[in-house]
Length: 271
Image 1 (cartoon, rainbow, N blue to C red):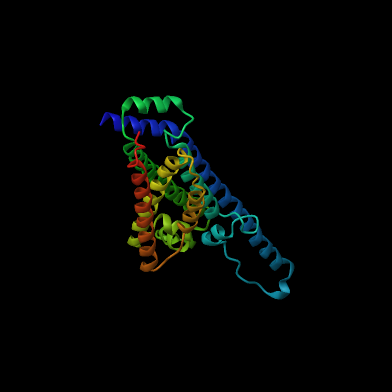
Image 2 (tube, rainbow, N blue to C red):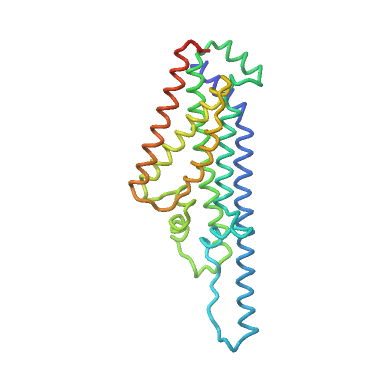
C-alpha cells in the first residue's frame, strides 16, 4: 500500500501546483469576463434610457435590467469570449496538463523515474494510479467550477433590485444557462451520470496519453478529443437518449484505451 501512496504523492508533486494555478486562473477569468459583459450590458441599457429622454415624442418604454443569462451568453468581443468559452478553454488545458505532465515515466524528471524504479511497481499499476489521480483532479475542477458559477450568481443578485428575484432565482439560473446546468444539473440525474463517465473517460485518456508518447507514438487525436469533450460538456437541457449515448460512448472509449494499454504491456514492456 505504501508503494501506491508514494505514486499518488509523485503525481501530486508533478501536477498539483500547476493544476490548481490553472484552475484558479480559469475561475478568475470567468469572473472577469462576467464583469466586462455586465458593464457592456449596463452601458447599452443606459443608452436606451438616454434615448427616451432625448426623444420623448416616441413615448416611454420599459428598459429592464439585463438578465444574468443574457450577460453570460452575450460575452465580450462581439460574443467571441463568454464565461462558457473561458471554461471550455480552461478545462481542455487542464486535461492536457494532466496528460502531458502527469506521467512519471515519460521522461524529464529523473528523480521521479528513479523513485519509481526503486518501488518496483509494474507500469500497469502506475498507469492505474495515475488514472485515479486524474479522476480526482477532474472532480476538483468540476466542484471548483460549480463554486464559481454560484459566485457569479451571487455577484449578480447583489447588484440588482431585490424585488426582481426570489429565494429560488439562483437555482432557476442553473436551468437557464447551458454551462451552469451541466455543472449542477439539479433534478437531471442522468446528466450527473453522464458527467461522471465523461470525467472517467478523460482521466483514462490523459493517463494513457503519456504512456503512448513515451513509446514515441504521438497522441494528437487525444488533444482534439479533450477540446471536443470540453465543448460538449456544457450543453443545455437534453433528452435521456442524448445523455445515454454519451455514457455509452465514454465507456467504449475507456474500454478501447485500456485494451490497447494492456495489450501493449503483455508484449513484454512492463516497468
